[in-house]
Length: 88
View 1 (tube, rainbow, N blue to C red):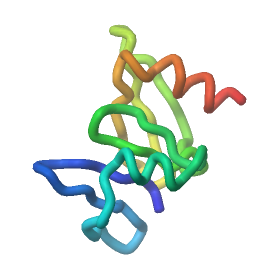
View 2 (cartoon, rainbow, N blue to C red):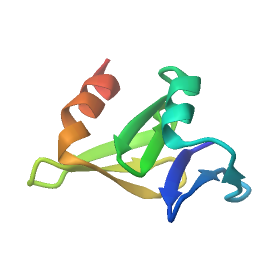
View 3 (cartoon, rainbow, N blue to C red):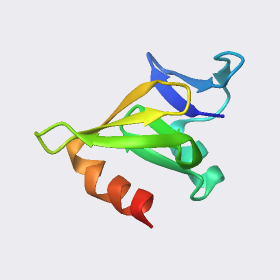
């Protein structure tokens, strides 16, 4: 599991083999994954073990690169917490 995204009232589970719809909200998934995934924005929950790189965007936000090459934007509000988790 690489990440979960919310769009138009649905939550999608992004895996290496596809993108099925999840039966939970992002908040529920965040609680269930207990530290393995981190909330990087209102619409994205990312698996920490698949983060390969974090780059500052210069406006307080950042961009993550995941193991499959996907880029995910980290909101300004969550950027410091995400950096802290990745450093530790």
